[in-house]
Every structure is written in structure tokens, then in C-alpha cells.
Length: 442
Image (cartoon, rainbow, N blue to C red; front, side, top):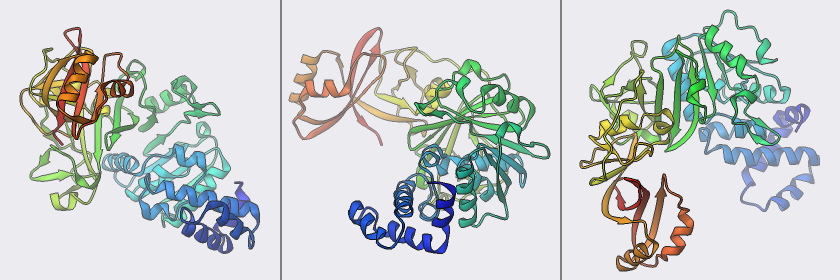
């Protein structure tokens, strides 16, 4: 799709075509639908409408569904856009630090972050070098009614005027024709530009979750964010916005956050930047005095819990397994805060280099999933197969860390055929491969 086709699609005739394509996409056979639409419209325009209809259907899982039905996308733009709940969390934190401020959103893409920054009450200027991408972002601002708070420029992010801005955000390109880029040195704009932003501006830069800890500049906070148990991204906060060295943030939809701290009887929602520090004690940052909701109201939104580490991640005992095993959230693992989980559940590590925590007590926590230990067995396929047969296990979830086990291959070897279910956690304890037969607590 080119810019002219996009504009035609957004015009009345194209909008009617897109509405028809969206109505029947996924219901009518796509070949038949395309053939029918081409009787009244140009083939290129029909192809663009069908692509948009398909992207809008996919976008309902990434953006708010009501927004997805109105927004415009490119395939690359959709895939690279920040998930709405994550963008909302970041925008809320920026708005708490600089209420009503002016934000420059570099490498804004199709506008995922731009939209949430504007909705958070900030005045935003988006910048992207690709003309089609910026035209899509402008359309998205318009259809979502945010033209009074946001605008988009087509320009090189490294040359954009940053003067007069209260905050600069940046989402460097991390994809090439070959796929995703994991080396920060290959980012576009380059890593040197990222370092410049973090050292000279009040800034937040989105990076890949696998960013090495040792390249994070001194004074910069690294925050890893997971949504529904899946790590989505990391963000680097300049010293002027940082309140920790490393942070793990866990998001859950509909206010469901097991064990989330209640502050004065109220649960934090996605409208606040409150956090939980290393010893599990809740606190309220000085610049986040607003944004709390009653628990009933919070149940209709996204709950947010964060664990931070100021300088020292702490230590934990290493012992054999107890009555419960905890699997820390991926954001906690990436942030290096597994020992924080151990402290919060009165637990210990099974191995100093493996991210499993054990305890003899159960404590619901948003930072880990708990499992009740039913049995402990050596890692021996013959022994395990006999156990599975004896206990009539038919549904097996297999988790592993620190051992050379392929879960699907092990499942085939164990031949589960019964009606019972279990979760097998295969890991290393005192140097030996060990299997914990468990039942999930939640």
C-alpha cells in the first residue's frame, strides 16, 4: 500500500469499501469476498481494504477493540507497535512525572504510544522517517479524536528539534529484512543516539527485553514489562525519571492480580506508577499522588504491580525443594529480581543459577506462579513412565530449567493416557536432575 491508496481508503468511497471488507472478513471466503468487491472497485484498492480488514481483526488482541475497528495499519507497523496496555502504563508513568507536559515521540510508528501519551493528558509530537507510516499515524490520531493533543512529522529522528520538550521518548527500529535485531549496536537510530538521549534529555527509550545489563548506563533505570505473563519489552528511563536501578512490572487485565499490594485498601490500576520495593513493602512515589481507584473500579481495568531493586538484588538460601515451587514472572527474571520473590514468599532457591523458588508456605504473589508439590522423583524416564501410568495422568504440562530436556519429547516418552492432570517441573537440585510433580495453585 502506498500513500495515495491509503488516502483513497480513508476517503468516503474507500471507507465504505473498508467497512464492507471488515464486515465480511473472516466470515466469507476471502477469495470470494475479494472477487465480489472487485466488481465495483479497483483491484489494488480491494487488496488494500482486505489487508486492513485482516490487520484490524488481529489488532483487537493488541489494542483496545473499539480502537482497532477504526485504526489504520501497515503490516510492519502493526507488528512493531507497542501493545496498548503496555503503552498506557508507560504513558501513565510519564504523565505522573510531568503532568500536562510536552512529549517528543521519536520513531513513533503508526502511533501506538502516541495515542496513549495524548490520552494521558500530554501534548505529543510524533516523528518518523517513513512517509506512509506517518500518514497512518496522522489518520489514527484523527479517527481517535486526538488532533488537539497530538501531531506527527515526517523527519529523521536524530535531526528532530528536541528543544522545549519536557520528555523525549524513542522506540528505535529493531527489525531488518532478515528479522528482529537483538544487538543494540544495530538499532536504528544507533545505540550512540540512545545513549545521548538518556544522558542529555528527560527520556524514556524502548529496547528489546534481552538487553544486556552491563550496557545499561549508570543512573539509568531499566524496566522490564510483562503482560499476562509474557515479557513484552524493556524500557530505559533517564536519571531524571528513574526511581530505581532495575524494575519488573507485571500487568494483568481486568484488575486480576493475585497478591497485588493494596494501598490504604485500594488496588493500583494502570493509571498509577506506585511500586513495590525489594522487601515487598508498598510505597507511593512523590510524583504519583493521584491515580488510585477503589477495588471495584480497578477490577474493570488493568492491574499493575512492580518490584524494584535500588542497588542490591539481595541473596537467598539454596536448599532442596519444600512444599511449594514458584515460577517467577519473566519480567522478574529479566530484571534479576528472583531473590526478591524468594524473600516475599519466605522462600529459597533450588539452585543458585536457576530461576525457581521454593517455600514451605504459600503466598499469592503477582510476581510468580505457585505450584503445590505432590511428589519429588529423580529424572528417570522409566520411573516417570511408571508414575504416570500408576497415577493415571493424561494431561501433562512440562516445565524445565537448567536441564537438557525437550518437553514434547519427554511427554511422548511418558505416554500419558489417563484422566488426571499434573505439572512436571524438571530442574536441577544439588547438581542432580529432579522432577517435581505439582498442581498449580491458581
